[in-house]
Length: 323
Image (cartoon, rainbow, N blue to C red; front, side, top):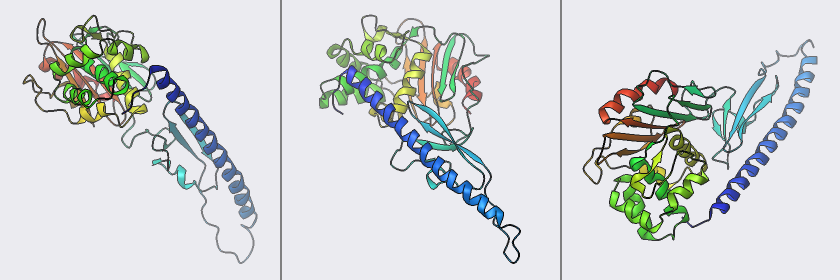
């Protein structure tokens, strides 16, 4: 992947949003034209309903509303009046041909192929032991424990941001890519330290670019702090804007055993339909663990004062918020 500056990243995102908006307007205009013509034809057919000797009229479709989900812009509702067949490109569920990021569902249906998330706007996840902070982000909003904005030790979760910087704003070297892969898949501390020495300001730049208010390096990647909300939002942005990111692919392909011998198998990984996970744990000081995952229609992050057993006990309480 090539290098680019932060301003260029924002420009690309703006262009993508404008392009998606143009597509939405075009879809609405085209559908409106089809609807007007179809309604007129339906009225003409209605006038023939009592003519003698004619076969029964076909049953025409009722009015329907489809929702076009556009990354970076939002959902657009398109209504097809009664008597008008639904255009092929608006048959739900569907991905608009030529625009893989734009999906169509029936109004009120989920953007993904699975059951809708119960989240409607921001909600509080109740009943989780306060030793754990947790946040879940869907296209409907954020569900979070009351302490989810609290800064906690970022542990190896911060490697996501470090690798993001190295891949997109580094020198593009094969060495950077190899170190990045080990930092994510094996959670290799030595690989992360090598990247941090080369790009000491990288984590903070990524955090600022994503508006991660609780995330900072504090002098070294191993001292970094972040929040469950910051990480869940960050993964949501990456999943929407860069779905082919190596970071996501390496989370999918994480090694069962990390470089230091730790088994990577707890926390948010157990939530429904999870596709990839990054874990973190303390090597010194108070026992603390973290996990961050993405699924088809949500992202999640959890930080726990305690071990994997404690986090495994707390995370399932949030299953009802992901559908």
